[in-house]
Image (cartoon, rainbow, N blue to C red; front, side, top):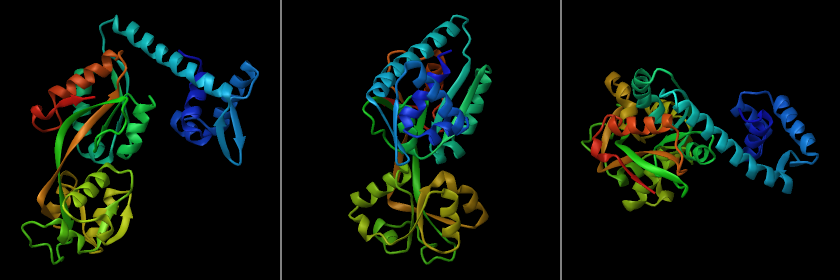
Length: 307
């Protein structure tokens, strides 16, 4: 319902990129540029400074962004409250999830939620944990499911379940027959790591540090942004890695990989993050309640919230 020009401007202003805004809005870049130009003509002032391929907000743009956030927030609240008068829980729910959660835990849960509330449409964005929490904080997503605690003070974090990580190696590795493996043993072998910004990477780095292995002692031979690429590299004998036990079950069954428990064990809490605003749509609240009643396959008592 809000002016489309305002929605487009808001996205460009938050991203400081016409290209990224176009991708998020599923528009062409010329169309995004045209909408912003129209808004600038309406106000008879420039909202962005454009220099050397980069953009920044002008003072007028800063002011417009402040009002745009309030207007879009109130518009969303109005639409949600009016739709709730019908008693139906309906509409789009913008969910973000890290790759592990999105591919291995979320599909069945979204199917069950859809069955309970058929008028809803889940729209899923998959990215690493850092990107997801930033999008939730910027109100580009309603809720995020991430593999690490949130670093944003304006987000509420709710722990939803626990996940165990294991070391994986090729079946022909000299580690393959061990009952468990220490952090020091992992560090003595070629190691394949996730990329910076990954919740898994953050959790594993903390694990090594807390167990007396400085990160500069890791023999990192690759940093890969894809879990599938890591599994392929390990299966080829290029090194060992640490991944969620949930994500390697198929390869273990097929004999392509071997998983070895870590000693001490490495378990992490998977979290839900959402904004602190006093108003929360009935759809979002229903989804949060559903998660609380149906935690992702683990003990209900793990679910708690903190601010």
